[in-house]
Amino acid sequence: MYELLYIVPTPFTENDLDKIAKQTNEIISSLGGKITKEKNLGNRKLAYPIKQIHRGFYLLVNFEIAGEKIQVLDQKLKLTPEILRHIIIKIVVTKKRPVKVKKEEPVVDEKKLAKDSAPEKEKDTEKSKKIDLKKLGEKIDELFKI
Image (cartoon, rainbow, N blue to C red; front, side, top):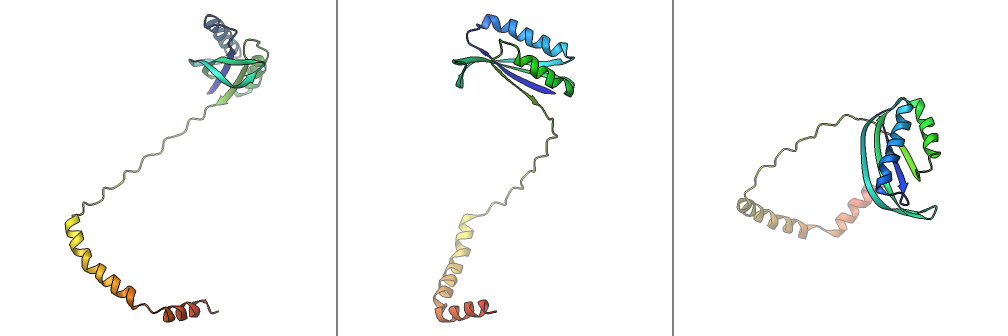
């Protein structure tokens, strides 16, 4: 499965788009391709001017064709004067991964948690006051000795 995106310059009108799209579809069909989807993405401003053209109609075509015919299709589209630029992309269909469902966390009673954590905070502050910097420094030196 392939996808073709091509730009028709604005000197052509929307009435001309049907004729150009039909011509492009005939090129694909003549090479043994089967068109599955067509979409007109509308008139848009180009990111930069191409051949002094600032706007163009973007047309998208999904189709199936043999892989060896892509290069021939690319050459024919390059020679088509109505197409300003084009790109052909191979669409790879992948399997979707199953989504993991997160387990719900148990609901915690905040009042009970506040009562239980209050004595622990007092213990933590007592422990932090008892730390002796000299002993800490000595332990660090012991750890780094080889």
